[in-house]
Amino acid sequence: MFNKGVRIVLVSLFSTVTLLAVLQIFSRFFGFPMSWPNEAMRFLFIWFVMLGSGYALREKKHIVVDFIGGALSVNTMKVIDLIMHVIILAFVLVLIIYGFQVVEVTSLQTSSVLRISMGYVFLSIPVGGLLMFLYTLLNIVDLVQGKEVRS
Image (cartoon, rainbow, N blue to C red; front, side):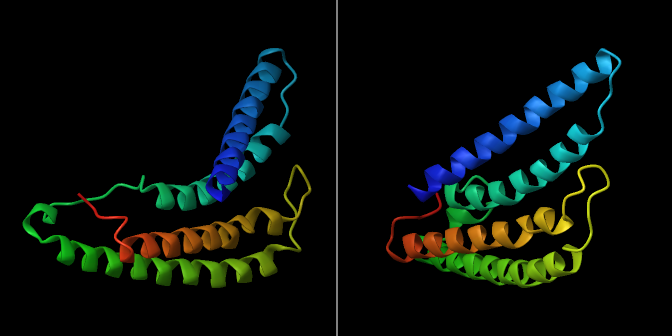
């Protein structure tokens, strides 16, 4: 259910970015260029990428280089997958910790066109990191319970 909510947010973000791009194109075509859609698209796309990374982790949509998988036993592959997920958890923890520090530093800065706090933009880093952390934990649970085995 939660995953479906994340998917809805991602579709909404991408749709909004697309609509803003169309708006910007037409406004330039008709001689009334607007600068705010460009900045809004950039900020929304940052959120899209950070949330989409977590979603891709859960759905196993990231690129995998697997050149020794066929030569190893299923148990060995499970151990390798578990180690990989623990490394991801460590990276994501760093992302979350330093992401909150970046939000704190940038919260007093405002964007040049929209005049919103840059803290809202950079909040995508720890929020996306928390989503990646949650989904990686769920992937580990699936792996330990035998629900997930790489082919």
